[in-house]
Amino acid sequence: MSFVDYYKILGLSKTASENDIKKAYRKLARKYHPDLNPNDKVAEKKFKEINEANEVLSNPENRKKYDQYGEHWENAEAYEKAKKQQQYQGSYQGASSGYSEADFSDFFENMFGGQSSRGRGRQVKFRGQDFNAELQLDLKDVYTTHKRTLTVNNKNIRITIPAGVENGQIIKIKGHGGKGVNGGPNGDLYIQFSIVNHSKFKRDKDNLHATVDLDLYKALLGGDIMIDTFNGKVKLNIKPETQNGTKVKLKGKGFPKYKKENQFGDLYVTYQIKLPTRLSNEEKALIQKLQKLR
Image (tube, rainbow, N blue to C red; front, side, top):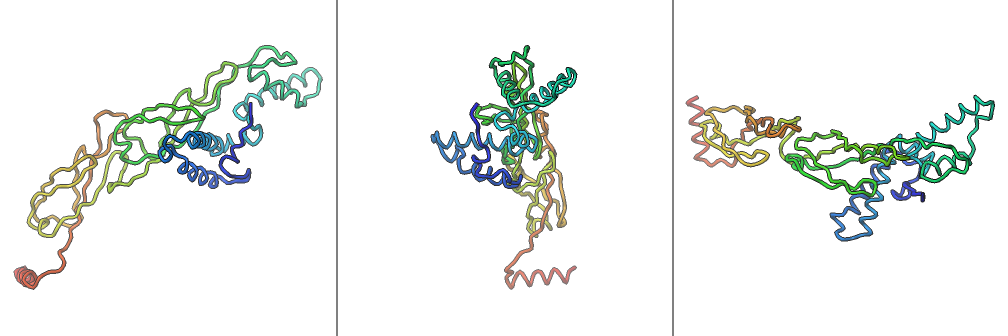
């Protein structure tokens, strides 16, 4: 198995902090993203390498294994188990409990399908490592259920993203982690969502909040206005003498409820009354007259 230097791929040293890794990954991922480099095979390969490096180094536990075992990091737990077993057997038989480099090589030769020169007997099955990935989406992307292709460990995985996924939420894709050893089951893929909100709506789980400007005359006299919801416009009737800061609820006009088909939260609209400016002399006179009447 050829050694892949994940630190070199991200342009970092082994002393890099978690923040250094995150910054380097985001910078390079933007630079080599397929959307910005269409039909560029070199950029596509580089993008896959960057994602693979980030999956390992951004996970403290996986990074520790990688620093210690290099290309064999995914099988670190299997090696530790075998090492403990060897130490136990050596102690039981009155032999040395040390574990030599030859033992290490034989162990991994056996792990990867070769025949150990020492004939260790039946191979033990080990579950593959779990992978972790972060997927950044815009809020509008998770308003509807859709499919998306991810590149994880040089493999394209087609997943369905349910409507209503929340920022920071983690979902598990079973069997798409590291390959099992000696016929063992594959690990799982854990995807954490980072939801960016560029809309004018504030999200609170499956409810949305918005502020709507209301002119003074409509607030005083009432009438109809058109306002934006997340998926279109609706007409609202304004009651006469509506006060600044009045809040109304539009039932079912919020965000989709996660994995609950055709169920939505509510939209809460807060009215913000805008006072007229650049009054004419005639307008000022009428307002003064109204002031006297009040």
